[in-house]
Length: 118
Image 1 (cartoon, rainbow, N blue to C red):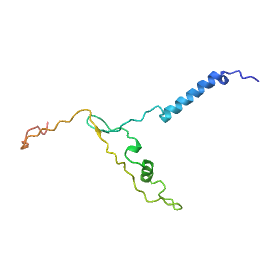
Image 2: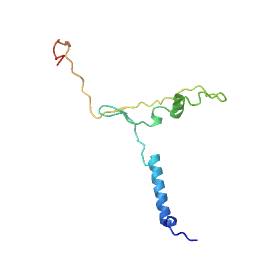
Image 3: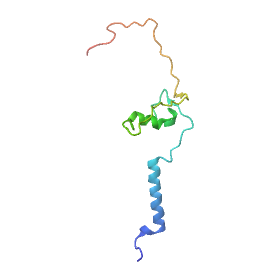
Image 4: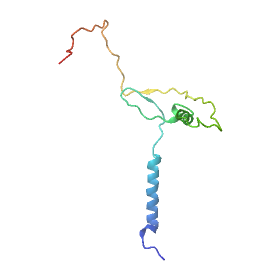
C-alpha cells in the first residue's frame, strides 16, 4: 500500500534531517569559535567565560575532585589528587588606561563637612 502523506517524500526527509541537525548544532554550540588568545577581563569589562584548559591542564579531574565524585568508592579508592595548574600567565585586557588616583598629601577630613541628618 502506498503512503498518501507527504512525510515519506525525499524532500520532507531532507527537511526533517536539516531541522534535527540545526537543533543539535544549537544545543552543542558547534558553531562557536575558539579564541586564538585568552585574556582576563580588565578595566571596563565584566567577567567572562574561560576555556577549561587555560587555568588547569586537568580541569575535569579537578572538578570531579571538588564535587566529591568517587570520594566514597571503597572498592577502587581514588588516588591522591594533585591539581596541574597551567603555567601560562594570563594577561589582562583593558578597555582604557586607568589613571592614578589623586589624593591630597596630608589627608584631613573636616567635621561637619556633609550634613548627617536631613
